[in-house]
Amino acid sequence: MTSSPYDLAVAYRIYPKVSKIPFVYPDNKLALAEVGVRTFKRSLAATRAKVFFLLDNCPPEYEQMILKYFAKEDIEFIHYPGIGNLPTFGKQIDLLLNQNIAEKVYFAEDDYVYRDNAMEAAISMLDQKNVHFVTPYDHLDSYDLPIHTRNKYEIAIHGNFHWRTSASTCLTFLTTKTILKKTESAFRSYCHGNWDSSLWFAITKFNILNIGTLIKYLLTDRFITKILVLSWLKTGSQIVLGKKYKLWQPMPSVATHMEKISLAPNIDWDKVAFPKD
Image (cartoon, rainbow, N blue to C red; front, side, top):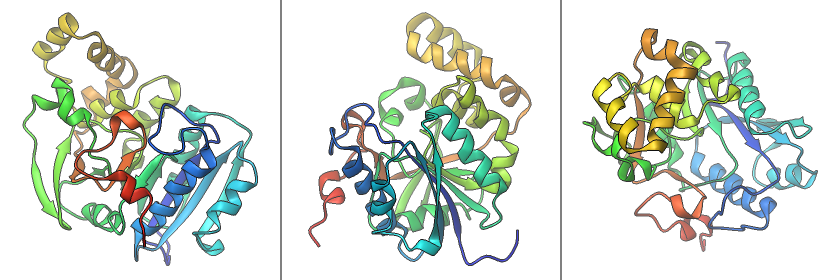
């Protein structure tokens, strides 16, 4: 890695349409994306980040909005003609593997809200022993889905947060360029029809090798069965031959996905999105 003034390389993708039902601006994606960009910048605090904004069919207003919060020298705009979710994730992988700006890398989606200064703790968590991936999102699946809740997790304290190992998360996460290279094939499976949850189960190997668990869910839960079947079909080589990696999530959450029914618990996200200072 060449000498660089940056601590973190970020691939931040934005698409100008609203997905699902967010808790803010359900009919205005530019305003929704601005909440994400503004709070992400505040959350970085003193972290020196080079941010590549992957704008997929976004009008000029998106660049203008981003420049309200980030200095020109710290960002780069990359435009695509509406190629969609799966291909833009592949572009994030390409970009972060080929850059020589920072060893720590971050995949960012456009529908997240971040707590002030909190990303610094998530970024520094990567320096801890046995930490391979960090999500800023205390995902509700960890509390609601039996395949998550019926597990023995590790707990750690770092940066004023409790952290727990997690089976899976979404596609907003931190890792290193070195680990991303080792797990590239598993992540690229998303571009070929895998689910985010399915590829994470292959990487963390939670319950994926337990035949009794597989049979139980095959008989009782069609949704979880599909997750596990996809994991084997799309990322079987990682499950069988790959290393078991540890994914950590914070308690309370550093950030939340904006979907109204999936907000991370125990945080007033309206106050985070619209601070009065």
